[in-house]
Image (cartoon, rainbow, N blue to C red):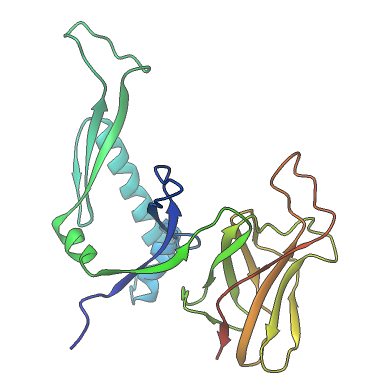
Length: 248
């Protein structure tokens, strides 16, 4: 029998502020690193799904649609599409009709609610708990950009997104820092060239070299320091990903 679950949310648990020494409480943090798409990506997906329209035409229509929605709601109207109901919303207390808009107590914003169709899709989401997220340096997730898979599959010669905490490769020109893949069978080590597409404390995007098929272990060496004046550490810190990566 086919499972009712068709979608996956990758979730970390973070210790809640109400936790005590004797009783730990956790809150869920959904991992969305590397999974945000923009209008240009949506237009490309429409093309890939078989649209005969030109990419530029589709992107222009999507962008113009967004502009119409924003202006309509800003003018006090509501918008209903397949995904969301968007309506103007005003926060704050009004004592009487003589009260003037005060930015200190009033806030002009919007109310966004999923539609019935969207809520029915959300019923098909299953949760994949990744573990308890710490506060130190760590690699949380590796995403294959070409396939969007996060199950350990990576594609030779393509980009990967490494998400985590305090993982920025720094100093970028230092010889003892970088991203390394070790073949678990041959023990051969491949260092990813420091031509990083993105290099931030929480996400690093890098291109894989040509890799033979097999299982790999990923580690990251950096002298990035979060404290003080961001002065680099004297020696590099090694951060290892706890999941085996597989090149098919």
